[in-house]
Image 1 (cartoon, helix red, strand yellow):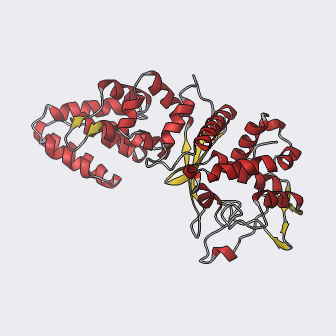
Image 2: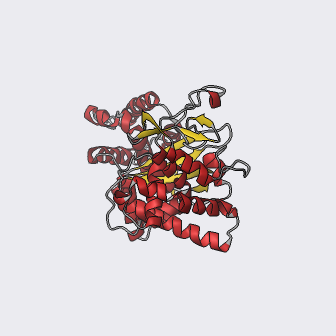
Image 3: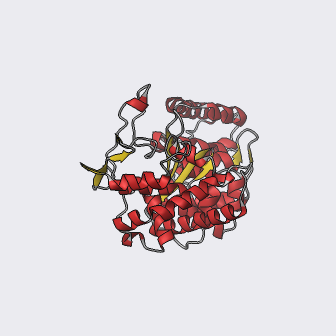
Length: 382
């Protein structure tokens, strides 16, 4: 079966491939239909474990998983989905629409079974835009995806263009599930580390070819939230390099990993390896050199101009403390432009020389690199 690159369908597909001991490309629609008994038991067993008991309401609130036990079991529901096919194309894979008939009640699939695909822009969104054109197979695989879910404030899942990563990720989670279910694991006080899981998976590779997306979501009650963090390939390979250089622990201790999830490491790392308030280094020389080499996106010409500028300032009679504090307080680019012009004038009045030339100003007057330039000037003045 081909991947849809929908996070829920893909995770369900890899989970099914794991339990059938097949490659995802060898999974057939018949396999999905035949797997319902096995996978329903796995899901019921999983959500019955105290450690994971809240997942069913966070993932599939108001579904069969969270409703009081009655005549319709999860197996019945999933088999009912598969047996009822409509004549509209699936919005995820191009197959047929599921039109389900259970206990003589006909309805379309809503957000209880397919998170994040139903609009919730209306006040009473349970009665507005609630139907989905989703085929039985994508629907069943979406339910299977709960077996790959973990909670860290929100439920989260990974999806990647790398087949190897998805296999390793699924295998890791399912092994953990098996152990926890067998031991009757209790809820943990500490939040599940989303970054630690990522590190444990990617740091065994020599080179990672692919991108990773992290989905944080909540589909419970009246709430339907989702946040997607795109983890760039360069960041994944950076984690691997940090591990090899024995710098990963220090990197995490400085809480730099949050910027990997946000995609803003280049703009923020200098503020974390230096204490700009106390004007001192807080990271080791090894980590500083490593990050300046691997992460700094400023062109060499800009770095050289900043070094020349700050060297001149530090050997002048100007009040460096005042200059430093003024720059640190600047939050707007236009204010930074004015600051550069005024600084050049002050330096000229004091020394009779220019602090920088017009072509240097053009390099420094770069709104796209504003934060990086500002932070590099600050740390260079320390």
